Structure formats: structure tokens, C-alpha cells
Length: 205
Ligand code: MD3
Ligand code: FE
Image (cartoon, rainbow, N blue to C red):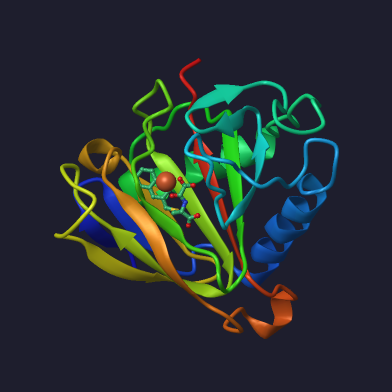
């Protein structure tokens, strides 16, 4: 069932079956290993993000992209694999029907049950191509806001393991966040405690 939450924002629950979820999870675990593996993102204000992150193609730093790790081991970022780009284009076709651009960035966020993501906009990419989001593991509350403010009005959507969300058009620059992760809700067969979110993006660089 495809649900349009706002213009250009489409949720397709259970888009990945359990076998494909496991394949993506195994790949994420490989990517999380050093060098250029899982890291804690530090914000310019001196804070740290509670979700830890791995990047492919380009490293994201608040608030820019770089090809090497600048705050850790200095390693070059891992390559963005061709199959992930195919997955992204298929996601956009299923959600929006549009032919999609060439994806070249993956940001993978690892959440434990205490992790959160505050309301923000993703505006560091120089392309207006849709962002593709894939969820694995624990269920979360995803808060989809508006383009004007980080406050109400917003819509809370439950995202479960295997769900696809695509943000294009007028929704591309909407504020959004993850106020809650429900620990212990991952599919038992997956072997994951916590939540992973894979976003695919076009850098425009
Ligand atoms: C709407 N991630 O990585 S996914 C992020 O679940 C991020 O880890 C959250 O926000 C997560 O930046 C939410 C949904 C999402 C991702 C990117 C978007 C929604 C978006 C970009 C533009 C608009
Ligand atoms: Fe975001």
C-alpha cells in the first residue's frame, strides 16, 4: 500500500521482504567496519548526534560533504556500490513514477533505543533529486514537518523494518526527525537490536 503523506512524500510499507532486508543489513554491517566505518558525528556547536553514522560515496559533516574522514582515521570514504544506485532508482520509480537521477551518496544511521534525531532539513546536497529512505530493525516514529518551521504542523508516521520512504518535489526540503525508537520491535528473524536507516542521495557535486 502506497501512501502519499504530502506532495512528493510517499511511504511504501514493507517494500523490502525479509530476505532483502537481511542482505541490506549484512552489507551495512560490513560498511560499519573500519577504516572509514561507523562514527559519532560531532556538530559545530560541540554536541554529538545520538545516532551513529556510516557514509558511502561522500562523507557527510555538519554541514558539508568530504571525500575523506576529517575527524577520525583520515581514510578515504568507501565507494558507493552500483547495486545500491539501482535500488534507489527502483525505489523512486515505485514511489513517484519518475525516472530518477544517479545516486552517489548513502548515509546509514544506526540507532539504539535511546537515540533520536532532532528536527532538521537536508540541504547540503546540490541536487533536488528525491531522497530515498529504507528502514531496518526496530520500529520508530518518524516526524514529517513542513518547509517553514521546525515545529507544528507535522505528521507522525510509524516506520517499520522494510519500509521505503521517498522525499521528492516540495517535500525535499521539509523539516523532519525521529523522536522515538521502540526497542525490541525488530523482526525476530533479522537478528538486529536497534534501528538502521539507509538514505540514498544525489550529491550534485
Ligand atoms: C525528508 N534520517 O539521515 S529518514 C537523515 O530515520 C535523516 O535516520 C532519518 O533524517 C532516519 O537526514 C529520517 C527520512 C528522511 C531522510 C531524508 C530526508 C526524510 C527526509 C530528506 C528530505 C526530506
Ligand atoms: Fe534528514
